Amino acid sequence: MSIDHDQLFKVLLTSFFMDFLELFFPEVAAYVEPESLVTLDKELFNDLGLGESYEADVLMQARFRGVSPEEAWFLIHVEPQSYFQADFAERMYRYFSQIYLKYSKPIYPIALFSYNSPIRPEPAIFGIGFPNKTVLQFSYDVIQLNRLNWRDFLNRPNPVASALMAKMKIAKKDRPKVKLACLNMLIGLPLNAAQRLLISSFVDTYLDLSLPEKEIYQASLDAIELNKKEEVMELTTSWKREGIAEGLVQGREEGLEQGLEQGLEQGKRDLLQRLLHHRYTVLEPELEEQIKLLSVNQIDDLSIALLDFKTLDDLKNWFAK
Image (cartoon, rainbow, N blue to C red; front, top):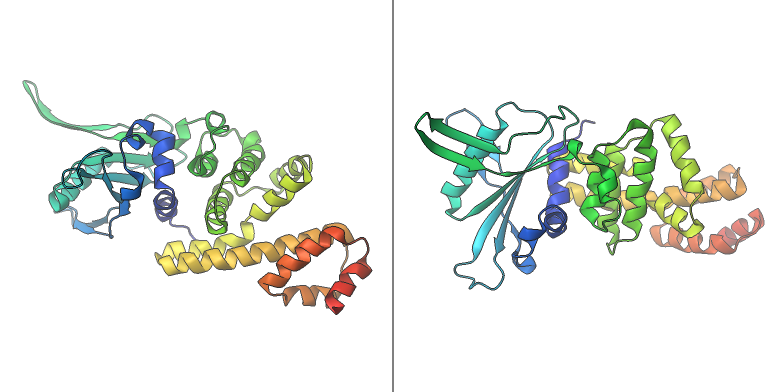
Protein backbone atom coordinates (compact mmCIF):
# COMPACT_ATOMS: atom_id res chain seq x y z
CA MET A 1 0.00 0.00 0.00
CA SER A 2 1.38 3.40 -0.96
CA ILE A 3 1.44 5.96 1.81
CA ASP A 4 0.15 9.51 1.50
CA HIS A 5 3.23 11.14 3.03
CA ASP A 6 1.81 14.67 3.15
CA GLN A 7 -1.25 13.34 4.99
CA LEU A 8 0.96 11.45 7.45
CA PHE A 9 2.86 14.67 8.21
CA LYS A 10 -0.42 16.56 8.53
CA VAL A 11 -1.69 14.17 11.20
CA LEU A 12 1.59 14.44 13.10
CA LEU A 13 1.61 18.25 13.01
CA THR A 14 -2.04 18.76 13.93
CA SER A 15 -1.63 16.30 16.83
CA PHE A 16 1.49 18.04 18.19
CA PHE A 17 1.30 21.56 16.77
CA MET A 18 2.51 23.46 19.82
CA ASP A 19 5.41 21.01 20.17
CA PHE A 20 6.24 21.67 16.50
CA LEU A 21 6.37 25.43 17.12
CA GLU A 22 8.45 25.06 20.28
CA LEU A 23 10.94 22.86 18.43
CA PHE A 24 11.47 24.92 15.29
CA PHE A 25 9.98 28.36 16.03
CA PRO A 26 10.32 29.09 19.77
CA GLU A 27 9.93 32.83 19.12
CA VAL A 28 6.51 32.14 17.54
CA ALA A 29 5.52 29.72 20.30
CA ALA A 30 6.28 32.48 22.81
CA TYR A 31 3.48 34.70 21.48
CA VAL A 32 0.91 32.00 20.66
CA GLU A 33 -1.80 31.29 23.21
CA PRO A 34 -1.75 27.44 23.27
CA GLU A 35 -5.38 27.06 24.34
CA SER A 36 -6.50 29.16 21.37
CA LEU A 37 -5.20 26.80 18.65
CA VAL A 38 -7.94 25.53 16.36
CA THR A 39 -7.48 23.39 13.27
CA LEU A 40 -9.60 24.99 10.60
CA ASP A 41 -11.91 22.82 8.56
CA LYS A 42 -10.53 21.54 5.28
CA GLU A 43 -10.94 24.33 2.78
CA LEU A 44 -10.68 23.80 -0.99
CA PHE A 45 -9.44 26.65 -3.18
CA ASN A 46 -9.31 26.97 -6.94
CA ASP A 47 -5.68 27.20 -7.98
CA LEU A 48 -6.07 30.59 -9.68
CA GLY A 49 -6.92 29.36 -13.14
CA LEU A 50 -4.51 26.40 -13.22
CA GLY A 51 -7.38 23.94 -13.37
CA GLU A 52 -6.48 22.36 -10.03
CA SER A 53 -7.84 22.47 -6.52
CA TYR A 54 -5.88 22.79 -3.33
CA GLU A 55 -6.59 21.78 0.25
CA ALA A 56 -4.58 23.57 2.90
CA ASP A 57 -2.53 20.87 4.61
CA VAL A 58 -2.20 22.42 8.07
CA LEU A 59 -4.08 25.64 8.71
CA MET A 60 -4.27 26.67 12.36
CA GLN A 61 -6.13 29.58 13.88
CA ALA A 62 -4.24 31.11 16.81
CA ARG A 63 -4.44 34.07 19.15
CA PHE A 64 -1.67 36.34 20.41
CA ARG A 65 -1.00 36.19 24.12
CA GLY A 66 -1.98 39.23 26.13
CA VAL A 67 -4.05 40.86 23.38
CA SER A 68 -7.81 41.28 23.35
CA PRO A 69 -9.54 38.35 21.59
CA GLU A 70 -11.27 40.68 19.13
CA GLU A 71 -7.95 41.86 17.63
CA ALA A 72 -5.62 38.97 18.29
CA TRP A 73 -6.48 36.25 15.79
CA PHE A 74 -4.07 35.15 13.09
CA LEU A 75 -3.36 32.02 11.01
CA ILE A 76 -0.40 29.66 10.74
CA HIS A 77 -0.13 27.75 7.47
CA VAL A 78 2.25 24.78 7.30
CA GLU A 79 2.72 23.13 3.90
CA PRO A 80 4.35 19.67 4.12
CA GLN A 81 6.03 18.82 0.80
CA SER A 82 7.19 15.23 0.24
CA TYR A 83 8.54 15.66 -3.31
CA PHE A 84 10.61 18.23 -5.20
CA GLN A 85 8.62 20.85 -7.11
CA ALA A 86 10.46 23.43 -9.21
CA ASP A 87 7.77 26.12 -8.89
CA PHE A 88 7.03 25.53 -5.20
CA ALA A 89 7.87 29.11 -4.13
CA GLU A 90 5.31 30.51 -6.57
CA ARG A 91 2.73 27.96 -5.45
CA MET A 92 3.39 28.84 -1.81
CA TYR A 93 2.56 32.46 -2.67
CA ARG A 94 -0.61 31.41 -4.51
CA TYR A 95 -1.72 29.41 -1.49
CA PHE A 96 -0.95 32.32 0.82
CA SER A 97 -3.00 34.66 -1.41
CA GLN A 98 -6.01 32.40 -1.51
CA ILE A 99 -6.01 31.81 2.23
CA TYR A 100 -5.74 35.55 2.85
CA LEU A 101 -8.62 36.26 0.46
CA LYS A 102 -10.69 33.69 2.32
CA TYR A 103 -9.99 34.85 5.90
CA SER A 104 -8.49 38.39 5.74
CA LYS A 105 -6.24 37.56 8.69
CA PRO A 106 -2.45 37.75 9.10
CA ILE A 107 -0.82 34.49 7.99
CA TYR A 108 2.48 32.99 9.15
CA PRO A 109 3.61 30.68 6.28
CA ILE A 110 5.90 27.66 6.80
CA ALA A 111 7.11 25.06 4.29
CA LEU A 112 8.21 21.65 5.59
CA PHE A 113 10.24 19.65 3.04
CA SER A 114 10.56 15.94 3.78
CA TYR A 115 11.94 14.48 0.53
CA ASN A 116 15.35 12.78 0.41
CA SER A 117 16.74 14.74 -2.55
CA PRO A 118 17.80 17.21 -3.74
CA ILE A 119 19.80 18.36 -0.72
CA ARG A 120 20.52 21.88 -1.99
CA PRO A 121 18.72 24.62 0.00
CA GLU A 122 15.12 25.30 -0.96
CA PRO A 123 14.24 28.95 -1.66
CA ALA A 124 12.31 30.80 1.01
CA ILE A 125 11.16 33.73 -1.08
CA PHE A 126 9.06 34.50 -4.13
CA GLY A 127 9.39 37.86 -5.81
CA ILE A 128 8.19 39.91 -8.74
CA GLY A 129 10.27 42.88 -9.80
CA PHE A 130 11.64 45.14 -12.48
CA PRO A 131 15.06 46.75 -12.93
CA ASN A 132 13.82 49.88 -11.19
CA LYS A 133 11.21 48.49 -8.80
CA THR A 134 10.35 45.54 -6.54
CA VAL A 135 6.65 44.87 -6.93
CA LEU A 136 6.40 41.89 -4.59
CA GLN A 137 8.64 40.10 -2.13
CA PHE A 138 6.90 37.22 -0.35
CA SER A 139 8.91 35.21 2.18
CA TYR A 140 8.14 32.12 4.21
CA ASP A 141 10.02 29.96 6.70
CA VAL A 142 11.57 26.72 5.48
CA ILE A 143 12.29 23.48 7.35
CA GLN A 144 14.28 21.16 5.08
CA LEU A 145 14.69 17.89 6.94
CA ASN A 146 17.37 16.41 4.67
CA ARG A 147 19.67 19.31 5.67
CA LEU A 148 19.19 18.83 9.43
CA ASN A 149 21.46 16.53 11.43
CA TRP A 150 19.54 14.12 13.64
CA ARG A 151 22.23 14.37 16.35
CA ASP A 152 21.30 18.02 16.94
CA PHE A 153 17.85 16.91 18.14
CA LEU A 154 18.93 13.89 20.17
CA ASN A 155 18.66 15.53 23.59
CA ARG A 156 15.56 17.61 22.95
CA PRO A 157 12.59 15.94 24.71
CA ASN A 158 9.94 16.78 22.14
CA PRO A 159 7.52 14.35 20.43
CA VAL A 160 7.94 16.07 17.05
CA ALA A 161 11.72 15.71 17.35
CA SER A 162 11.38 12.00 18.15
CA ALA A 163 9.33 11.59 14.96
CA LEU A 164 11.14 13.88 12.50
CA MET A 165 14.61 12.62 13.38
CA ALA A 166 13.65 9.65 11.21
CA LYS A 167 13.57 11.93 8.13
CA MET A 168 16.65 14.01 8.83
CA LYS A 169 20.20 13.68 7.47
CA ILE A 170 21.26 10.16 8.49
CA ALA A 171 24.33 8.21 7.41
CA LYS A 172 23.33 4.76 6.17
CA LYS A 173 25.31 3.04 8.93
CA ASP A 174 23.42 5.07 11.57
CA ARG A 175 19.88 4.08 10.58
CA PRO A 176 19.50 1.38 13.31
CA LYS A 177 21.02 3.74 15.88
CA VAL A 178 18.64 6.55 14.93
CA LYS A 179 15.58 4.32 15.11
CA LEU A 180 16.50 3.17 18.60
CA ALA A 181 17.25 6.77 19.62
CA CYS A 182 13.85 7.96 18.35
CA LEU A 183 11.97 5.26 20.27
CA ASN A 184 14.14 5.63 23.37
CA MET A 185 13.35 9.36 23.40
CA LEU A 186 9.67 8.60 22.94
CA ILE A 187 9.33 6.39 26.03
CA GLY A 188 10.46 9.29 28.22
CA LEU A 189 7.72 11.66 27.02
CA PRO A 190 4.39 12.13 28.87
CA LEU A 191 2.11 10.88 26.08
CA ASN A 192 -0.94 8.68 25.95
CA ALA A 193 -0.99 5.31 24.17
CA ALA A 194 -2.51 6.64 20.93
CA GLN A 195 0.05 9.46 20.71
CA ARG A 196 2.92 7.02 21.29
CA LEU A 197 1.54 4.71 18.64
CA LEU A 198 1.20 7.54 16.13
CA ILE A 199 4.83 8.63 16.56
CA SER A 200 6.28 5.13 16.68
CA SER A 201 4.37 4.27 13.50
CA PHE A 202 5.79 7.40 11.89
CA VAL A 203 9.33 6.35 12.87
CA ASP A 204 8.77 2.82 11.64
CA THR A 205 7.45 4.06 8.30
CA TYR A 206 10.55 6.12 7.56
CA LEU A 207 13.12 3.84 9.21
CA ASP A 208 11.95 0.51 7.83
CA LEU A 209 15.14 -1.47 8.47
CA SER A 210 16.64 -4.13 6.24
CA LEU A 211 17.46 -7.54 7.72
CA PRO A 212 21.13 -6.67 8.43
CA GLU A 213 20.03 -3.36 9.95
CA LYS A 214 17.49 -5.17 12.13
CA GLU A 215 20.27 -7.40 13.49
CA ILE A 216 22.31 -4.32 14.44
CA TYR A 217 19.22 -2.71 15.94
CA GLN A 218 18.42 -5.83 18.00
CA ALA A 219 21.98 -6.07 19.30
CA SER A 220 21.81 -2.44 20.43
CA LEU A 221 18.39 -3.04 21.96
CA ASP A 222 19.66 -6.06 23.91
CA ALA A 223 22.35 -3.89 25.47
CA ILE A 224 19.98 -1.42 27.17
CA GLU A 225 18.23 -1.81 30.54
CA LEU A 226 15.52 -4.49 30.67
CA ASN A 227 12.65 -2.15 31.55
CA LYS A 228 13.59 0.26 28.73
CA LYS A 229 14.07 -2.66 26.35
CA GLU A 230 10.53 -3.89 26.95
CA GLU A 231 9.08 -0.41 26.46
CA VAL A 232 10.98 0.08 23.21
CA MET A 233 9.89 -3.37 22.00
CA GLU A 234 6.29 -2.39 22.60
CA LEU A 235 6.80 0.66 20.39
CA THR A 236 8.22 -1.32 17.46
CA THR A 237 5.36 -1.01 15.03
CA SER A 238 6.01 -2.68 11.67
CA TRP A 239 2.91 -4.78 12.22
CA LYS A 240 0.81 -1.73 13.15
CA ARG A 241 1.49 0.38 10.10
CA GLU A 242 -1.10 -1.02 7.70
CA GLY A 243 -4.17 -0.02 9.70
CA ILE A 244 -2.87 3.50 10.29
CA ALA A 245 -1.64 3.95 6.73
CA GLU A 246 -4.98 2.80 5.35
CA GLY A 247 -6.84 5.42 7.37
CA LEU A 248 -4.41 8.12 6.27
CA VAL A 249 -4.48 7.17 2.59
CA GLN A 250 -8.26 7.23 2.57
CA GLY A 251 -8.24 10.54 4.43
CA ARG A 252 -10.69 9.36 7.08
CA GLU A 253 -10.13 10.40 10.68
CA GLU A 254 -12.24 7.45 11.77
CA GLY A 255 -9.88 5.24 9.78
CA LEU A 256 -6.94 6.67 11.68
CA GLU A 257 -8.65 6.12 15.03
CA GLN A 258 -9.52 2.57 14.10
CA GLY A 259 -5.99 1.96 12.90
CA LEU A 260 -4.54 3.32 16.13
CA GLU A 261 -6.80 1.12 18.27
CA GLN A 262 -6.15 -2.00 16.22
CA GLY A 263 -2.45 -1.25 16.13
CA LEU A 264 -2.28 -0.84 19.90
CA GLU A 265 -4.08 -4.14 20.48
CA GLN A 266 -1.96 -5.98 17.92
CA GLY A 267 1.15 -4.42 19.38
CA LYS A 268 0.37 -5.78 22.84
CA ARG A 269 -0.38 -9.22 21.42
CA ASP A 270 2.81 -9.26 19.35
CA LEU A 271 4.95 -8.14 22.28
CA LEU A 272 3.47 -10.85 24.49
CA GLN A 273 4.16 -13.54 21.88
CA ARG A 274 7.75 -12.40 21.46
CA LEU A 275 8.32 -12.39 25.22
CA LEU A 276 6.86 -15.89 25.51
CA HIS A 277 8.98 -17.22 22.64
CA HIS A 278 12.05 -15.56 24.12
CA ARG A 279 11.46 -17.31 27.44
CA TYR A 280 10.17 -20.70 26.26
CA THR A 281 11.61 -20.88 22.71
CA VAL A 282 8.89 -23.25 21.45
CA LEU A 283 5.22 -23.19 22.41
CA GLU A 284 2.73 -25.98 21.84
CA PRO A 285 0.15 -25.26 19.09
CA GLU A 286 -2.63 -25.35 21.69
CA LEU A 287 -0.97 -22.55 23.65
CA GLU A 288 -0.42 -20.51 20.47
CA GLU A 289 -4.15 -20.75 19.72
CA GLN A 290 -5.08 -19.74 23.26
CA ILE A 291 -2.86 -16.65 23.01
CA LYS A 292 -4.62 -15.59 19.79
CA LEU A 293 -7.99 -15.70 21.59
CA LEU A 294 -6.99 -13.53 24.55
CA SER A 295 -8.83 -10.25 25.07
CA VAL A 296 -6.90 -7.01 25.52
CA ASN A 297 -7.38 -7.13 29.31
CA GLN A 298 -6.22 -10.75 29.40
CA ILE A 299 -3.12 -9.83 27.40
CA ASP A 300 -2.31 -7.15 29.99
CA ASP A 301 -2.87 -9.62 32.85
CA LEU A 302 -0.67 -12.31 31.29
CA SER A 303 2.09 -9.83 30.49
CA ILE A 304 2.28 -8.90 34.18
CA ALA A 305 1.97 -12.50 35.41
CA LEU A 306 4.74 -13.60 33.04
CA LEU A 307 7.28 -11.67 35.11
CA ASP A 308 6.86 -14.25 37.90
CA PHE A 309 6.75 -17.38 35.72
CA LYS A 310 9.70 -19.76 35.98
CA THR A 311 8.61 -22.79 33.94
CA LEU A 312 6.25 -23.61 31.10
CA ASP A 313 3.93 -25.23 33.64
CA ASP A 314 3.36 -21.78 35.17
CA LEU A 315 2.03 -20.61 31.83
CA LYS A 316 -0.20 -23.68 31.43
CA ASN A 317 -1.54 -23.24 34.94
CA TRP A 318 -2.37 -19.60 34.20
CA PHE A 319 -4.48 -20.66 31.20
CA ALA A 320 -6.08 -23.45 33.22
CA LYS A 321 -7.28 -20.89 35.74
